[in-house]
Image (cartoon, rainbow, N blue to C red):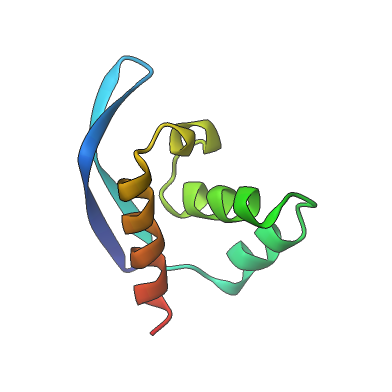
Length: 81
């Protein structure tokens, strides 16, 4: 399965480890459907989708700098074009 590495401009400390890169896999329809039917807000659903695609916990995503989160969003969009 195709993945893209995202280098974080602002590495984070998470559970005692410094994380400076994320690996995001290409989304499948089932990933999007699962996030759309969660009953959460659009922003929370998106965060959960990205956490799943990056094989991270949703609370990990909460710690990302906003500019790094935008990189995650851009990577996701690149899979769709």
